[in-house]
Amino acid sequence: MELARRLALLTVLATLVLIGVGVLVRATGSGLGCPDWPTCHGGVLPPGNKHPVIEMSHRFTATAVGLLVIAVAVMAWRYYRDNPFILWTAIIGVPLVGFQGLLGAITVVKELPPEIVASHLLTAMIVLSCQVAVAAAMYMEDSAWGRRLGTFSSAARRRIGTVSLAAIAWLAVVLWVGGYMTESGASTACDSWPGCTGAASLLPASNDHEVTHMLHRYLAAAFLFFVVAAVIPAWRQRSTVPWAALFAVTTALLYALQVVVGALNVWYTFPNWLAISHTVIASLIWTALSAAVMLALYVPAAARDRRPSATARATA
Image (cartoon, rainbow, N blue to C red; front, top):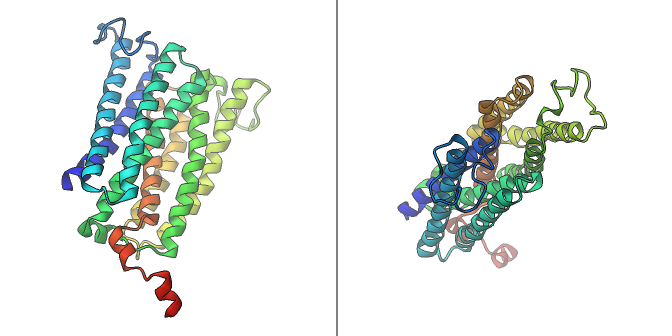
């Protein structure tokens, strides 16, 4: 089982790397470095030019992640077959990775349509959540790790988990619009921050690109309310919930850093390293929220077995 847990954790890290490499492809304009799929200029290996190499590095990384996801599903079948949540979440990850590959192929064949690029990014995030869920559940099912993470459910923890789940749903919209904005050419539609064409111009003009750009900012700004709603109760529970303080501090700092990086992207016209950092930080926030949902809402089998049954509660 230790091998299964480590493999699941490795898959989470590999998925984060995949997202980062995918953003590198987009930031460097390498999305069509290989005009065909699954080959690159008709071969398995790319020619020595920059853009084909970057694009194929993304495909190779995606293949590695796909194999890891399959391996995690096999491990779940072998060691956690009696745990429906772990088993089926791990299995669902397999067709999701397949769907992700299909979206990648469509992205190349259709020459980077913004809505497909945005959906490609969002699907990667959903795959990431599945792997975080499987890894967290595997560790929580281990008695030693379960004690460290705090395996017993409580109203306070459920509140943190419920708000974090709502935050993920909102962040999904932010990410999709952000991915669409980048590929549609709307990133540079606004040359100022926080306003669009000036510090005080908080409303966009009728230009579609400006509307798309500012919509992404409005959604990202509103996401602050979800962050606050998750961070404050987590911080208040830091003395009783082992992971709450780390979650609260990490999420708050990542959001603040994300805002700064977003502003710097506009001011410096989206240099590659800032554009990549922006999405990578978003994926780290997504990971933190996914972990919080699991740690707050998932109840290990041992803890469920210790719960009094409905009959016992009625006769008590």
